[in-house]
Length: 391
Ligand SMILES: *Cc1c(COP(=O)(O)O)cnc(C)c1O
Image 1: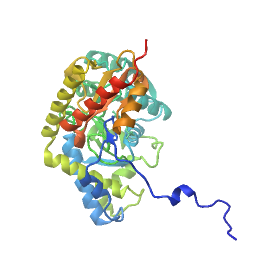
Image 2 (image 1 turned 120 degrees about the horizontal axis):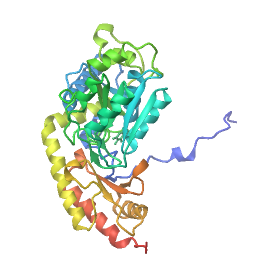
Image 3 (image 1 turned 90 degrees about the vertical axis):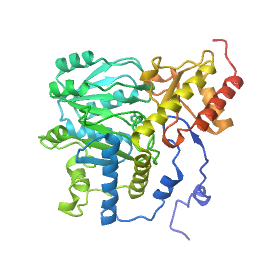
Image 4 (image 1 turned 60 degrees about the vertical axis):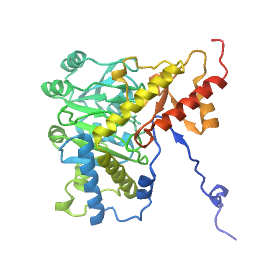
């Protein structure tokens, strides 16, 4: 008789089933075969010399897409949230003041992360999709004297691409670090970490980079390193402590194989490949393609009688387009219809934009006219077949 009281689960005795889907939401996006294949390579040790070569390639790739010369450039082992927490946990000490621009979910998240580690958080709040002027930012900075200011470049919950010019100068003047989230915009819209004086920049793997979820590039400049390596208290997270992560990523040649944690080996293979694709294509070409396809999509959406949520087309995030929920329709019904009949994911809003928008993401590998046509066709079909209510 078996000594086990829990039998093997029947579910695991069936083969894994994963559907093929059009991932036209705000992420994850479809992963090109080349990137999938890279992730399927044999595992090697996370401290083997070949792995360090690959990590070095990744570092160079991140420096390229971020347009930075920062040596402290690594990939987190974790999703975009790991990078958000890493940035805040390492540069802020409990009791210090943090200023957060909230115009969608991402500011809310960072504010909460900063509160959880004991920072004194000040929120500048606007409705989803609204801009912060440099004057407003500077006034709040003068008032709250933050050590860190957070702004989202590509606000994917609202579909806004926030202007960045001049803000880095304001932060320097007020001796505040400038932290920018580019998870949804990296590779799709221009950002220049060094020349825009961004002190800490991060992104994620599964949006326009088209890697599987689970890795997140991040970079710190000298000002950020000065602050985070001269702190009095240790960061609350061992896993996300940049003292350890910098030994793992940046100083490994001197220290030779220091174990901190086991990096996601397959995830790094895939990330390297998606960075290689972007390097081959060229950043400027990638920005151009996203902008051109987005313009094509806007036209198609307007032809369907839909209204784009961000009125000023120069402020729209090219990778994630938001449409106002068409009058009289239940947005959930439209989304379910497209998933069921077209095998296609689009999404509703997120956080404060729930009930305000529907979101279509066409990024990186998915940034093709044929995909925009398919998305428009599915939407047209859903609008025709989902019953319009009286309201
Ligand atoms: C998706 C997204 C994140 C979060 O990334 P995860 O990988 O889901 O943790 C953060 N910021 C923005 C702007 C995003 O679009």
